[in-house]
Length: 232
Image (tube, one colour):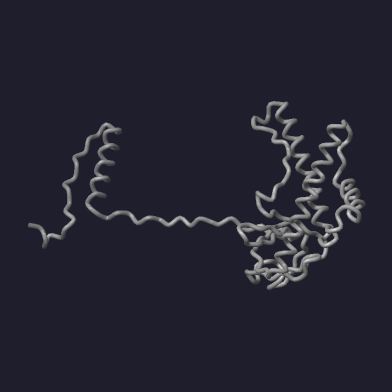
């Protein structure tokens, strides 16, 4: 599995639909968090994401008719994210009791529009071309960078997010793993220095070797780096 992220080029109508989907995902997350808190305070079993989604669908017609304008995947995936967040919270608390976590557990908080428009994730019928990505209920969305997203891979999900007025799409695709060979280093042999300093190093080596063998050899006369015609 591999992820790709690129920027979208949306018109005003598409931006409105994306804001609506992000708002529905944020609403479902906060609504599910409130329901889980109520169950916990009543010492009841917390409802799962599937149970919450069924309950939300039952209330959609009478209390939340505006949710028919967005894809059901936006609210369903938001409730799944809520389940994963609670699982992470309880796992962190367990590690803290065992002394393996020294930070704060950090209980879940409600999402606010002040933190940004947010994001939403869609699954199902998703198609990618060199110029567009097709999402449920949103249709064809133009890509700002052409040819970057894979067109032949199986798309698992697509997440649309907003940052500073710019909209992005992140897709998770199934791709076969290809192991790339490790780069091989090529060691280049450094040329030996052919100056007078090299003669002095060889002389020092012979003196050290002679002292170790008990025979002292005289140091050779230093040679000049200049030819005889240039000596003065």
